[in-house]
Length: 378
Image (cartoon, rainbow, N blue to C red; front, top):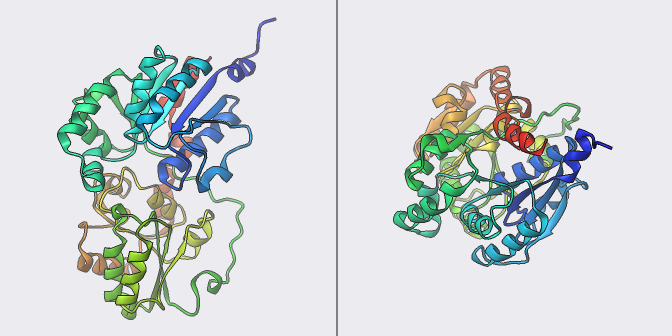
């Protein structure tokens, strides 16, 4: 008997390769993509270097796991190749360099099982230099060796694509831009009107930031900017997230005597209540691949102030049409822009409409890439 299309889908495997499921935009998008694939009838496996991370609880029970049990990316090449030869997935989606380069080596060793798509989420020439001090020539050499072999390459913004093509010496046609479908929909949620439960007593303006407490996010500049204007606005700043710079940021808050109006409560997996109750969202990053949190804020009609960092925020905000953009690392400009956004907010319906441009229905991570996957699987 000839199998049905659904049964045929069930026999095939889409493998999504990540270091782990710690909190991060790429990790969260991968989980949501995996969940969406299984709902559409495909068999999905998350292939992780280690089974760890706060996002594990968000994974659909129908998604399976394969753990490589490796602590370093270079040590993952052979175990991943063994996995590919064993499971023969039809589609492999590998995210986050240098794991993307390692996945290419694994794929070649395996005999090029299935179709390998690489997903790059950062402007690598910026992020690698500032985070780990990797020289550009090393980055460029490795990328030019590995990425040309992939079945396809996805960049999550135009800026990421431009940077990747330059660094990896790739043809413009080799890399596709597919924005993250960061607008998830907030229907059927009931939010408490008791703002004091989240924000404390009687602050007039509530300012929200979300992100890992790392060098990339530059919350030092945000806190310094907030120290300039908090008394004028009678405002509170909440930064949701965790990371290696927590103690440094707490010390800065104490030095500036802001402990009564700046809070670092850690990461909250339920972000919608914070977006819903805030008056302004601020992103202070030194660099971003895209900026999912900006879209999430816009979806709640929340005004946004962002640094004009490479490379996603200006694309989301259309160079200032949907939110204020300021220079990276300029606390005075950031403070002035926050005051301007509070006093002259953009209409919330306009912001929500902009967020809808990044919905699953319009992008579906994406029509282009998922369409390619489905064509292979059917």
